[in-house]
Image (cartoon, rainbow, N blue to C red; front, side, top):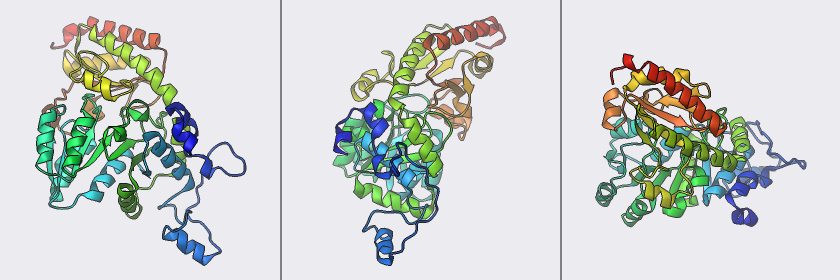
Length: 403
């Protein structure tokens, strides 16, 4: 384990967390689908059940395949402990519900993923939890709200879908100074491009469905941090039942072995696409932290190892223009997902913020014509040529659009 901790991130992605569960000389983690585990020794069974001894007793609690996945992410994020979930939103909701009770207060930003935002605007208020949502990137406003007192400070950076950036180190210090637990959703950046725990966060979580898995074929979530914080989250999850499936854990584990390679190629392609979009007359705005024009480019440059594969852009002509552009792309999935090896396009109104009303999206600064791009591993030249031909068709038909 020490050698794994000393290894580079790409090597950790391949090797970390697996050795303990390998059996019969196998080089790959087994998929253990057993729901229960047999014990002939009643005392040993009891010791495992109460946590005195390592082992497994029931699939809702722990599983060897899932354990390997948790350990790999834990090591890559530099955490002491980790626990997993059936989905990314289960990771978000279970973590929040573990620590919040009626009368508590949470501070966050306005630009979180739509499902997370629904928890902040609907479910937590119904529980009697006070929620303060600040303009994303307004660090002074965030600090002022945190200084008023809060149980949790929840951040997402880069945000979904507008890829806004928050200075983790700065606001995490304020959170810790006031006794708040600082949580960061690191789904977009991945451990390859950002390590929130090193920047002062207490907990880091992922929708493992996305870049960690990388192949759009398995759902999962994970949260990492200290044992002190992870243990109550695990307890909440094991009782409430949002358990990761071992087959999903295996698929995500397999995907993670190529995480560094994928992120390198996807980030390279994203930079090229962002520059291409900036040069298009029919593009109103491009949102990508790797562009010098991005509001918090310098913060992203400081806290990220690279800028990632996520971006968004808005078209002149709004949704009418989107309806003309997207169907003409050849190398594109038009789908409500991200992080896969295939490039994926989708308007926020049908992807990240489908749960929100047009008015709610507008209040978050998300125009109806905003398109999110999750850039894949295809050849850069092919992706650019594909966009060129689609924009050429859009220009031919632009007269029919109210610009």
